[in-house]
Length: 148
Ligand code: DQA
Image (cartoon, rainbow, N blue to C red; front, side, top):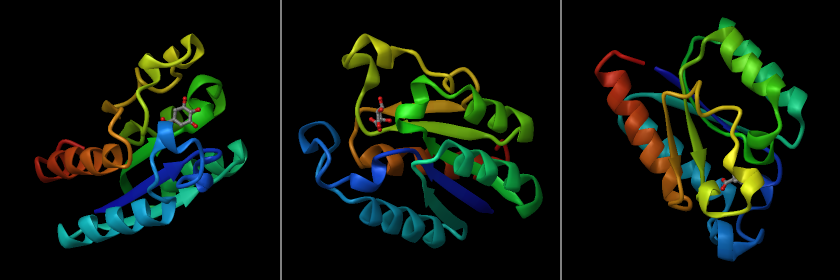
C-alpha cells in the first residue's frame, strides 16, 4: 500500500530545534528510517514536510487521486490551530495516526487542544523520533488486518 507522512512547520529544524524537547534525530533520518521499514514490509512510503498550511492541505487533497491508503501526520504547531488541515483530512476520509515527538499533554496548556485527535485512528506522542516508528508499526498492523 501507499503510505504518506506529513510533517508540519518547524520540523525541518529537527536535530537542532530545542533538542531537550524534540531530540537530536534529524527529519531526514526519521524519513529514511520510515521509508526503509515500510519498504521492508512491502509498502511504499512518501514523506513531505512543509511550513505552509496550504501545501499540506493540497497534498492531503491529492490523496483522493493517488491511491494513498494511510497517513502518519505530525501537524506540529498546526495541531493546535488548523481547522483547514483537519477539514482536508475529513474531506478525503484518509485514515491517519496523529504523531508527536513530545507529549503535548505534559507541556503548555495551549498544546492540550488538538484539532486532529478525534478524527485520528490513534495518537502516538512522547517517544521522540520513535513516535513515528511506533505509529508506522500500528499503521502496518492495521493494513495487514485490512482495517485501514
Ligand atoms: C509537536 C508538538 C507541537 O505542540 C509543536 O507545536 C510542534 C511539534 C511534536 O511533535 O511534539 O511543533 O507536534
